[in-house]
Length: 273
Length: 307
Image 1 (spheres, rainbow over the protein chains, first blue to last red):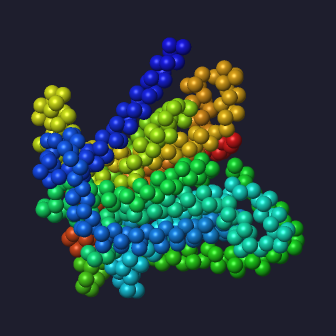
Image 2 (cartoon, chains in turn yellow, blue; image 1 turned 45 degrees about the vertical axis):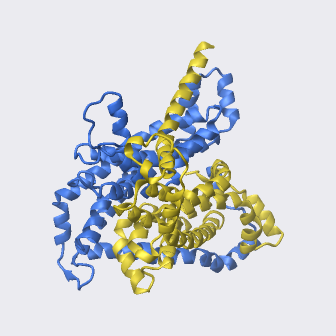
């Protein structure tokens, strides 16, 4: 019995130390963002602010607001489109396998393995030729395409777990290819959509390389603006940290609202290799 | 589980006809994705390799110079240094998976508060690379950063300037990179472990297996498929890693933290050497694909374990 308790204590010790490792930097970020300018110094970074001061948030918000909206206009359509296309691919590649469908699946997954630096120059060239360089739509399309491998993979694995007997009985009832998709697969894949949507939302919102190379100042998504904010010497640390937290707010909200479905969706088998 | 993946419905003749008449619709469904992938992934890949044969500043005309860029790249010490740094990151990321696996095993062992702890570990995933980079630049600040303040307090004299010393900087950046992704891998392992039916664990326990035996003999083999996927993810992700390096040090000081992706970026977008940058980008692709292939071969097994 004593041994059992020791192992439990050891387990908690490891887990809590790890939690401290994850929380401490976030704590410093949070208290710094709430301090007035004269209290911000690296020497007092641990201490709580003497009074709550939200001025750094208003300052950061003023700086970042236009780019924040750019990111919203980018992330919403890009997430939806890549999820819908991924669902269609996953449905066909799991339930309507045809000659060559395995090959098509491999081709689609290929994008997961390539470094974006290897396509960046021709991609920018192409986007400027078709008038999409330095536009939000150029970024949307890029993110949809480079999101396709993972969304296709997730939906394919998700749909593979739906029994074929359900599809067969729907077919006997007269449902065709599209009917099965609309009436059987879509209603069953809500949690799959949640997992894919959270994944895509977080990745696209936080993405930096495409954002900084495909758009210029006015069209920059928030992450590039955040980076530029820290680059200017005038901006103080409390404003930077407030900006970083503001920029993280949408992903945080998504996780708070949908996080429980995310884990449930993962548990339901959408992480199967 | 796999049987579901490879099971084709046993269809009657009428159903077969229906499928055949639907072939066009089926093609229609994958066609948009295939077209997009062709235009945005495969054509640019080929073009990148092609631009590698050019002398080009990105604006003016291209001049064909044959293999010059590629031979220069193969002899470019800076490129091979950056490749070595990328490999080091891949090794560190892969080894750290062992720690994440151990933590997931503890978390999944019906421990109280595991939900909360798991959420805490996931926090860095929600922060962007840019935010994480800025935060860790402050933590590493040599004179008054959080880390050196702690070190001074516990009596370490002359703690290093983490991001300015060529012998340390690379490892100093590895820490926040691992910090960023740890929660994701822990969550994946946790989900996989929770997917193991209780009945299997229960049966082993009744047979007298110890918790350690259950972990090594039953749980780990059952989630090996996921572990292999994460190894590939960690290696590929490391080889093409860019974000924190670019924001925190830009590859410096003096190339000490340069990785392949940041080196390519610097050549193309900072010095307008688009021809040479394309060649480096193409080599980066080849290296990543070859290593991925090797890792997949190494981790492949003849039969997947089913449950």
